[in-house]
Image (cartoon, rainbow, N blue to C red; front, top):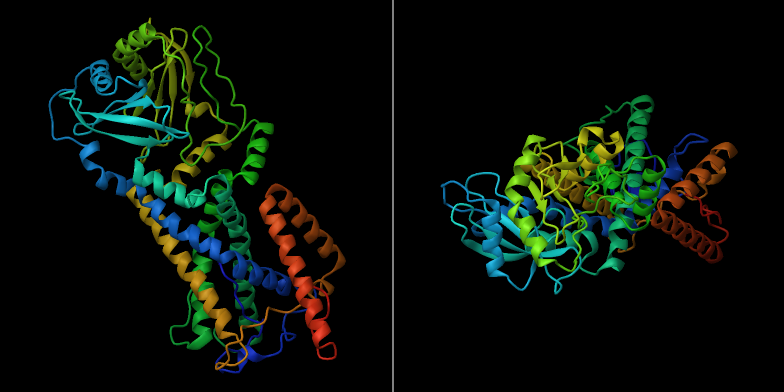
Length: 504
């Protein structure tokens, strides 16, 4: 639930226009209840963080369907009508080289099905980080269907890249990533808080009133704020698991929390193994740390090319591809093309719909011998789950079905956010007033057991350390709350029911 459930904790139905004007001090929560504290946190996080969430939701919905948009918009590059047998991969690569003799070829993605094009990738010093130039080749005729800049390990085309960077950092570069990390950091907090508030409201209604309590559905006959609250709470409950998943996977790509995730995975030996490509060494070395990126570039760095060695490596590509197939590394693969004679050719299975395994092998192009393997089944479970989670978040793991579910989740979250702001507006003192509604009850710390207070503070500090933007923004909320409380007390000390404690 992305914007605060602004119910004051009252149990009676909110059918009158005057209900939102009730004193902020009123609350029916039992003593020692966590509900007022969570409600106040839900309120501030929802009001202040929801704009970031809304931006991430809209861009995320677009990103979810980007793989399908890419297939439609770039059909002329990605597909051909030729149905004849495919020419040798080496011949296709050399055809692409003739079109871009000014660049050094670095990898190739052979067509895996009839009607697909082969994607020959070149290192281009004029492009940005993680970008390469791709020449698309008809595998049956070795003619080109066109060229384009591609990005990252998924070799995304321009429209998909543009949407990805919008979602990731609003095209503002590294500083813009603060917005997405802030949204991902708070999403799980808001979702869990909303679930708690909605379930508590349901339990209270069921035990203390004569009204029929609803948990998984809302009353279609309700009007006004009750109808808004029903939609906000019920819908938020239904999508909570999806929101927590998006928050968790999104944090792995973030700058600050993501670095902590990488360090934790390294400490627990949960990192994704990497393939040793040095000829003569067959061990699989663990990754140095870090985490998989949104569309991160997998080590495609510029190097001084040895023309003779590069040409020999290109000539061996078909033998390498056959050797990889013997180790069950087949179908959609990317083959690196080293520019020297002491690096193995790697054949890596790429992320594709309904493909749950991404094996890789390193092969000596001179002999066709496999020098190292990286088998998905041998990865740590955490590394496997991370890979699946990334593919699911990107809308790849289950293809179009995956994308439609993510799009539906984004649209639904957008409505929950809007309904949350609508609740805030409907709670203002009078219907004819332009004043905004007051926050939920202040002074909730004093109602909690000291042990509970210590536990909450310890949890907040721990989570704030692991997700720094969450911790800093939580501290900012607290300081603002303290300042507002002091200001209100100075203005009306004799009538202030809220006191000076900014707790909640």
